[in-house]
Length: 173
Image (cartoon, rainbow, N blue to C red):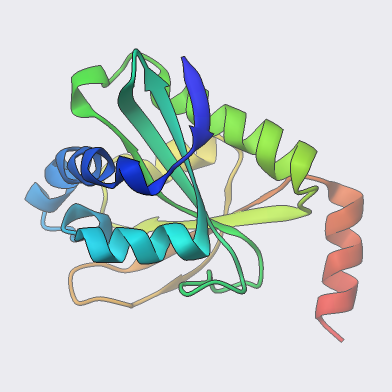
């Protein structure tokens, strides 16, 4: 297994991975942008966000993006925001998505970026994602009606309590 940042040469395989992985969610009537994203949109996504991949034998297996507050699609709480989490359905249930998620949290968010916390969002009517995020230590912090097909639930995970406390004091003056 190899963890790495995406490159422009990965766009075709990345698009296929996203479309395959989000097909089941689309069949539930929940439409996430990743389900139908086009190559030009992926290039814009790469330019503004950190997109990590897990690959095995040169096959893209799983992906997770970090959207930054200064990027083209910031999260709503002034913190980096996770998104476009996907694992190729061929590898479903084999732990690859969890391996990538844990690596991004520990190596990137905590060790490299030294983040106080991170957020993410998902559809309230999705049958299992909210539960998955709670199991990973994410706590609900809000919701919004951004699209006609679902309410977005927002979650936050505190990664460093001292830094979080200091950030909260500074950000709410």
